[in-house]
Length: 182
Image (cartoon, rainbow, N blue to C red):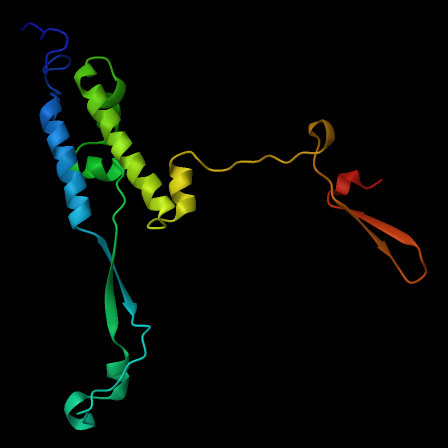
């Protein structure tokens, strides 16, 4: 049996065919985005609004006041896009997506995977900025976390000292790092 020419959809291991053509992959990725938008996560919470009993309230007919006050509400939350959820939706592994994204023989998928990542990143960024998602988590996921390293002089440990003056006017100094105390 002859191998398929390089770049052909069957190129590579004939027993391990690509799950999707590039066109079908894009169509199914768009289907995942649409499904995520139309199926928000749901959270059930107890109503925080003060409850008013109906004017025609009758304990015998409507049950106890406790049951009335236990009303809950169903809150929809935007479902964040992710590569992992996309792969679950497409029934492929994350490794398969990574192959589509950058492995030799999958060049026709590169732009599609880049576009998918751009859509996911844009949703995370915009959702974080609008407080739809936890902004810290969204920024961390995008690699935009504010990282600061605090060091002392010449890269040594940062030491904060506090000086206390007691009743007898004797100075006592405390360091934040034990090895810095002489």
